[in-house]
Length: 637
Image (cartoon, rainbow, N blue to C red; front, side):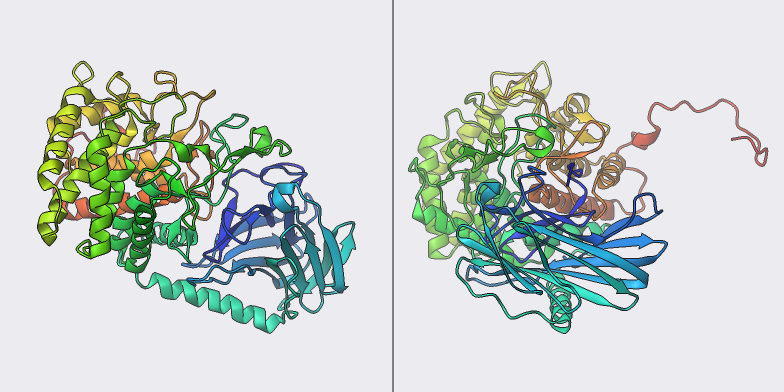
């Protein structure tokens, strides 16, 4: 690879313990193994020369009139890249067999199946792994024409081919060329394992096809649990599969994204490692998963969350910290990988995340809400975890923190953080009475009411007629779109509607929503960022609940056009509609699901009534109605 593909030009495959990105040109340019947060084997997405990749694609001549298309097999995580040329039509199907296991595995198989359906096509394979983010050398050993083993530090990668594909050494890498006619197929299997493991048995084409069918059956069977049958079925299904792919099956912990280092601004410094589990993201996913019918996944995360509270292993001694590794390890040291160029020169590339040490008090509200959603908080361990959080929070809620967006510009009294501490106390009080559980309900009630009064007094800006980002500013913040969702204020309350109007004016650009204005509220970082997909979907839900249905549906339909060719979203949308940030972003897909369900629900309530917002369709606002009409059939436009 001599250049970097757009971030959006990828699909994701995975086995529920690790994941890989496959570009529309047939490159696997991102794969960390044996876990999401392990060092990479392929990382050319962060350095096209040093990162390593594996390419399997039809060998198409430039200017031959060929076309490449990429898609998922419907309702699965099997990614198909199709090559259409005058001489033939073929495809490469990429997948990983799901390891839906409670035990971590050190062996992972990535399968690539090439086949031709018309004419004949030549295919080229180039496997060039670079271990430990491209820092470590490796040794290549060819056992025969069909088996090659790359030996790296702590991890080996075995590349095997089926009959008809001969592997050849090219320096320390492996290449192959082969031609298939209509009806023929061949497979390349990449197996990662701990160093010293013997190579697996050579795969047969029949066995590989069985694995593909098994993978397809797994996803179709899993998706049958989905109870959503609304207007946006395909997008919700794709988002549900994406959320599942980003969840570490042995612990039930979801990661924020499959990647690290992808920039929020091309060439900028806002390049973070998202391969970890944020308490906030996971907690907000619980209700959505339950509403979708995925009870097992929701309860698995709740157990993981309860275990974190019980362990209380945070370096600061607090009940929780904002993020953890997928196994619950709270230590996430951040290092800069200076040897990597970064995506299109976006530097520094960071591994690990120093924001883990930040104080973000809102996580206690999201965690408390997640613990009671499943209805079994009456269980002794679950209740003890919740009450321990509330006892700590009673003494610690009234202090500045870094806030939901993990700014590095100093602590503030963020309104959203206060809002979610109100949620924590509110949910604890209600659960204590609902399940007759012991707790300092009087103390929690006093704290809850004090938080409420403080938000109303200091979080409301009289001049702006809106709730603002923190107590010492008039800047708006899109995180407050959740105020009606968590029950702090009615979605039809005049104070909320005026806040929503203010956000429309300051944060919304053609239905896309910025988190905040970093120029007006410095966050300690240089550069700018795009609109935030999470907030854009929160905006849709807020509009729908506020009765502005035409505006909500228009914004939602427009947001869906920013999905990539296989229905995936990164974290942000750039000035030209490009996807920016780590990819795919779990929080974005979670918000898409909740927006779709809210919009469906509100549209169903409205039925066939006239539009609810009384403002007309957003696309027609500001257009003048002509005073004369053109006669029918005149032929004039």
